[in-house]
Image (tube, rainbow, N blue to C red; front, side):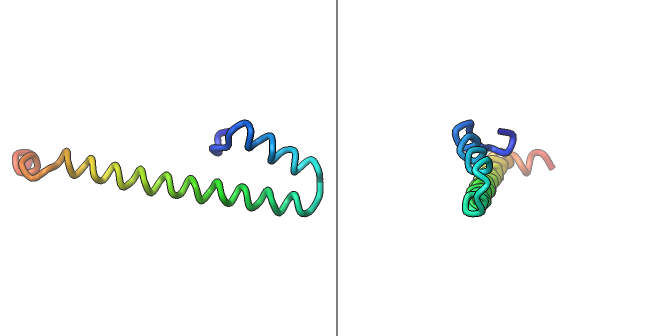
Length: 67
């Protein structure tokens, strides 16, 4: 769960791993890669939001008075 998987996603992954089939393991790898990609997109979105907020906070009027 610390990796960002829901309990449903974890249950599906564990079921596939318990099956022991090679195809299930490949699918698990794909699911984990998809989750990693999703996390990377979320990080990129949060970075953009943070930059936008920081720029708003340090706007032209404020940045001159703080320096």
